[in-house]
Every structure is written in C-alpha cells, then in structure tokens.
Image (spheres, rainbow, N blue to C red):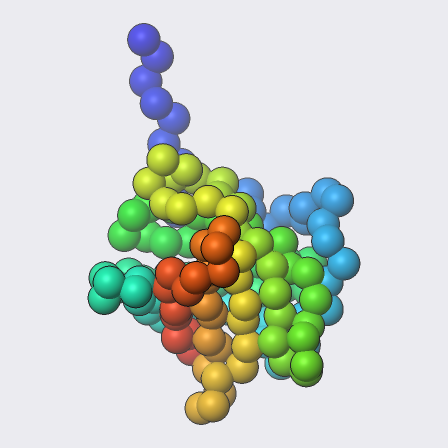
Length: 132
C-alpha cells in the first residue's frame, strides 16, 4: 500500500487559486473581494475557523480544524451585495459536507456573512468573517 499524499495548507490554497474552467457567470461586488478570516458556527453550536480568498472568478476556502478545503462556484448577486453559489470540496471530502448551497453578503459592521444550506434549503451553518 502506498503512503497517502499530504499537502500543506499553503499548497492546497495555491492549487485552489487556479481559475476554474467552466465557472458559472459571476457577479461579485468589488467591496467583497479579497482575503477574509473568521469563525463559522453550525446550527448545533459547533464552531470552526475558516480562511477565505474571494475573487471575481470564485473563491478558495480552507477549514483548518477539519481539515477541508473547497472552491466556491459563485452564481450571481441578488439585490446588490448578496451572492449565491455552491461549495465544492477539493480536500477532506470524507470529513465535510459537500455541494452545499451558500449565500454571502456584506455584514453590518464591514465584515462578511456566509450562510450554508442543505438540499432542503435548511440553514446548516453561518460564518462571520473580517479582513485579517
């Protein structure tokens, strides 16, 4: 049996920063672009750190405590600064929920709010992020 290949978090983030082919039409407000860090909270109260690099062509996300990584394929802005999309795991697929719908929007205090939804449109988690 061959040993499992382990990638450093930096290698995962760098790999995720490559443009996605066939990405959905995207309309991310310029004010939301850039690096974000913060804490997510599941509906049962479980919390976890996350790091997000949000670009016009999508996003790369790292959840270091699981560890999982994902690419966000962003669809469109709804009513100004709310953007919808889907989270597609690229690492830790057996550790985290895959293909969750998400919405992100500017927070009231200048941060970023992310909310995830399952296939039944039930909220499963929420994160509050700030610029590092």
